[in-house]
Image 1 (cartoon, one colour):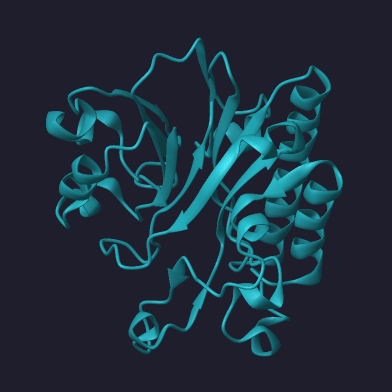
Image 2: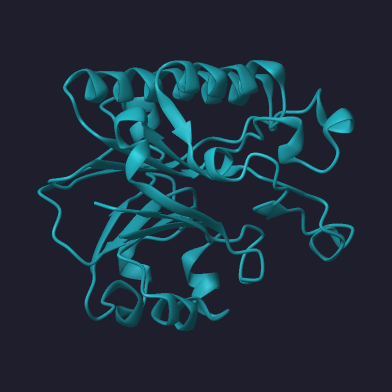
Length: 254
């Protein structure tokens, strides 16, 4: 089973940049999207009604902001929007899809660069997500977390770590939260399989950053430890355009 994830930075915009052609050429079993920025009513039917897939979405109350969505080949046993915390669920950042073999969380983590208030919101969100995942884990669930974490974990995960250590996205307190995720039994699939490989998933639109490969790896797939043995591969599709992020993916035996 192939599970892909992509921050499309606006699904309507991505639709005009070859999104569907790429999607149908790859045909993943599940495709998670972040930062869709669109109400379902604003999307053309050929995007929400892709043949062979079911489409689900969690929307932000603020128009044109945030939002996550997923395409699935198989029918989930249940789908939930949010994690049950109103101030986070209002921004449409989490979609929880339950399947017989695992629970999948598609998450768009907040960006903390705007202000101290937004950084606190991000950290509070991260804490609430970990609490939610730990409750799932305690029930024996196998868990997959895919999405845009808006944080580079290690120095290997961004081009210029020294120049960014005081900026949100690489602050010690943000990186420490990913440490806690790992300490609590979740595995960064790409880094598990490719511990020394340098690949990025996001580049600034400024300064020809993508052309120069001045990037960050801030998009991840984590799995709970009880599922790590089922992971067969992890991918970062750096050659796929259409957003300031590129798609990532994992292949699991599930």
